[in-house]
Image (cartoon, rainbow, N blue to C red):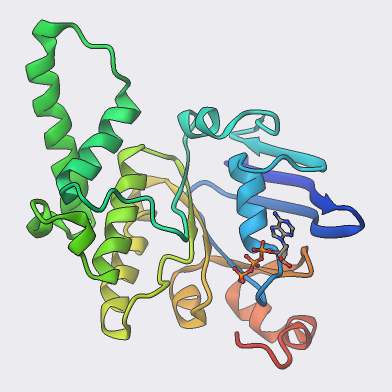
Length: 250
Ligand SMILES: Nc1ncnc2c1ncn2[C@@H]1O[C@H](COP(=O)(O)OP(=O)(O)OP(=O)(O)O)[C@@H](O)[C@H]1O
């Protein structure tokens, strides 16, 4: 089966230092791939190369079999590559619904004929509400986004991502700042992102229990390189992986 997302020899060097070092990765349709690694291993940098925030110094990125290495981020997004950020991209002074509505509108493009506008607006609001329902935030639609609790904010970030209708989703530490009691609900929301939809997910996460619960396979990064990429069971039993984590928090 053709991978939906592949990297080939993907590298990003700053002077002599390889921040990302010859990474070959394949994400299958509908697959959930977890990315782990000690602090500074290059996980966020890998995401930046895949989404086009950074240009690699060598190697390729392919989306649905087509090379996208030289495309800017917005054109990758238009081809179905979506991403959440560690730093929140939410407009705090707008309502939750407004935030999602803007994201839906951005996806659908602006120029509408006037007589179509009222109907289109209704469609956009309906689409935004459907996304909020999916992530379990419908009851907070009218709330000011800046007032949301951490767990709710993470859900809103996922809603913003879903509004872009991506086929490949990159999640960067979606559990960051979330209290332990809110983790199970967020895990359930994230699990529902693949399921029957055929969407694929690449997720960086420090919480190993979350990774083990969600991931079909786990990629382990260390000093910019891919140390292993296999089933959770095989990766956890891998002596080299255990060595890399010696003295580190998993
Ligand atoms: N723009 C940059 N200029 C110089 N060094 C950078 C830059 N971006 C990242 N680095 C370095 O590259 C290394 C990898 O960083 P990166 O943020 O990708 O790691 P990470 O695995 O995501 O870490 P964490 O788990 O802490 O988020 C780090 O040593 C970091 O200091």
